[in-house]
Image 1 (cartoon, rainbow, N blue to C red):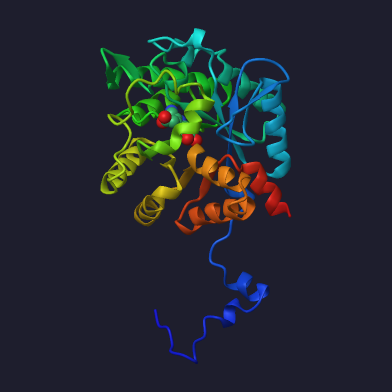
Image 2: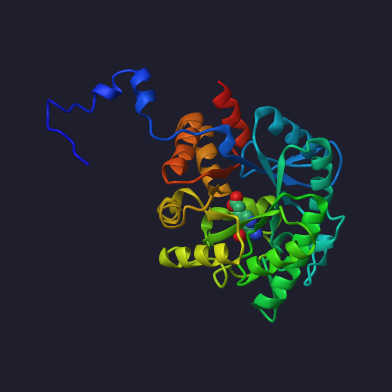
Amino acid sequence: MATGSFPATRFRRTKSSDALRRLVRENTLSVDDLIWPIFIREGENDETPIPSMPGVARLTLDRAVRAAEEAAELGIPAICLFPYIDTSLKTETCEEAWSPDNLSNRVTRAIKDAVPEIAVMTDVALDPYNINGHDGIVRDGIILNDESVEALVKMTVAQADAGSNIIGPSDMMDGRIGAMRAALEAAGHTNVCILSYAAKYASAFYGPFRDAVGASGLLKGDKKTYQMDPGNAEEALRLVERDLKEGADMIMVKPGMPYLDICRAVSDRFGAPITAYQVSGEYAMITGAAERGWIDGDKAMMESLLAFKRAGCDAILTYFAPDVARALKG
Ligand code: PBG
């Protein structure tokens, strides 16, 4: 890479007008990059705002369908569902997670009926259904791996049966991708994608999400025996390699902004489709500061998302998705 010396080279020349800046821009954000996560709840024609996520609410089924229609109108390719499950349905064994008629599966069917062209992504982890608030089955304080995988596989097939296009295992149990892929093939769901949360860190940035799905109060202890240690980078690459070998179609890095180095490393090493999850805490920091007038929220939103493109990501799961889509439309 040869760079001349001054004044033959003046970097300010290509910065001197909007036209030139646009010509030399290396990365851009597009509506095609977006996955919109929404929270869903029981009820009709209603929503419950989530205080720690300004502008985000839990939506009833009919409003979730409306959101999917809005996403399609805006050109957003995919919507991702996170259910808020009534405490009375949470158990130690989590069987509501694979009930064909649970909230998530009912909303998936309703969205696929109303807006078939939108891709529906569903979350595979037991935390919304678990009386312990953990992503796996807990016995005597231990999060059991293999029993959890069995439960997660049943959940996966139920979601695919309901019409989910993208299965998002966010649970971090070992061996689940291979087991899910085999079960999907056996059930004839050959075109259902797995977007594996391969590099998911035990992060403080999930706080507002746990409020949103009603898991905060229930969670005993932390998730450090299954989610990644924030000090590790090499392990992320080993996890990604493993999940791709087991049949993942796409890879998630999560959280997003504090782990841009991982996005870049995965992109360089594997070239497989990568999604970054701009998580609830990242969203809360930007919207919270903007509400106080401390930063320009719209500009910070766009800059934070462009960072993922620069780091090599193909897609971004972000609560800002409809705002971004509108901003990109101008
Ligand atoms: C758990 C799950 C979490 C998120 C998505 N799925 C939280 C956790 O691991 O405790 C967090 C997403 C966000 O913070 O926006 N299955």
